[in-house]
Length: 229
Image 1: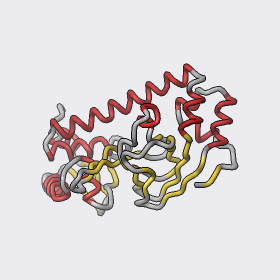
Image 2: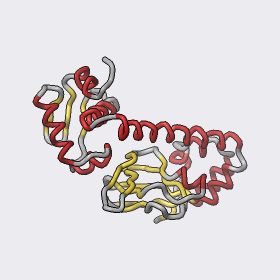
Image 3: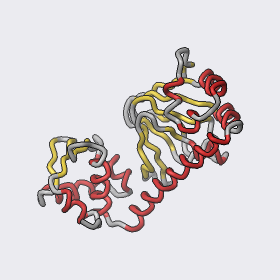
């Protein structure tokens, strides 16, 4: 890691519970931050390890993964610039919920746990923002649990495509460069991903050009996802 020498206030302002700290505490916190540059596939932290701090993604993408005893992985979520990782263990004192892995070359800002907790402890407004951040994460995990327990393979893939395409303006998305990564995100095996995508193409629901996928029939995809149209 490399200590930042430039002003990091703009980067830290992306974090709601840091943005609401007193100016002196923000300055003190910024002085303790470190920049970490990661190559694709590098580990940020490991599942179960004691938490050292919060990580703010400055560039690139990172996914949080849990692994079973037989080596199968479930991607809990993937995040990009402006998003923080590791709040839950930082605030509850337990180990990291999963392993964080760089999905592509990434740059992260590391914020040490002890200094962060000390600053938040002096600000009721920042503490309230922590509750909101954790509440959003609970909702995110509730969606994951719903997908895994209440929807079949076809529905899970269709729901994933709809969520990802909703982030863009042209109903398109870029698939991960490995089917196994997509399978790990939605809790299935890669063969199921390939079969479902082939089915969607045959039925004229999507078109694909390499990794680029575009939704042609959003209503039919919603039906396949088990959603009302």
